[in-house]
Image 1 (cartoon, rainbow, N blue to C red):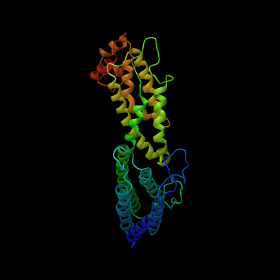
Image 2 (cartoon, rainbow, N blue to C red):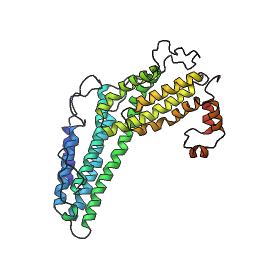
Image 3 (cartoon, rainbow, N blue to C red):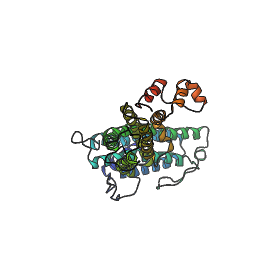
Image 4 (tube, rainbow, N blue to C red):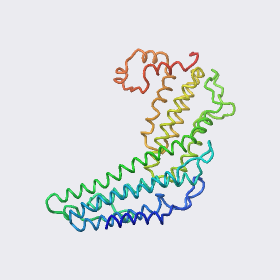
Length: 365
């Protein structure tokens, strides 16, 4: 009966499901609701999950727990999870109507909200499990966390308390594993359909008319440019134009996942661009390239965790090699990686790549 009730509740929640209103990717327009941006089904279903768990544990009957909790887990992992998965695939998949164009804004927003549904519902289940297990470190939030008595008080006989705790942990881990997989797939879809297509023109504009063959007299490399930080400014303007609107909608955890994937792609694109300047960089140009790459890295990781910089290690080391003086390079070329590590330098480029990088600069002075 409990499983039937919960399955019917999930079905009804999606029948009356409502999305948050007035969301937009226009950064100049305010968002019409408050974060986290999820559909109403998440709150409705998680309220039922909490109520069913509380009533089940209140019986203090191991047999009831053994019957109800696996049923809850099955419905969460099939009906609830499956409905979000189908909506992502059939209703909100961010695909452009015309090849070469971006997906419609309303479809992108709907897809982002569904990713949030997965993240927030996982967090809800995590907190519901902890509070119903009597976890003293849990805190009440959004009405779902009403702390119950410790499990060992409700189930004082034999190993019943351990059995119940394991059943609760199994409910969480099963749901968490499924949502993590789908979130990872959804992030990859966003990267392929939205982030990469938006990033490519940004990089083209960033390096437009940029010349790294710099005259010895130091005249400006950019015919239409002004200022030494032109490349970094162009990139930051373009980067923020398509990342900040998405950041406003996604949960912080989901945005970190998405920006980490996007930065991994950006680092490869930058590395490819540096290789592409082979024979078109002189010594003064190498100095400017190092500054430009550093500016792009700073703009990309601004406001994120410091570890995001690790994705750019190869690019940073390439510009470092380009700007070594001859004595430093000779010392590097004749030392082993082990000796470099002992000296505090861990290379992400192998010896052949380092030699190839060094040869990018044309006509060393």
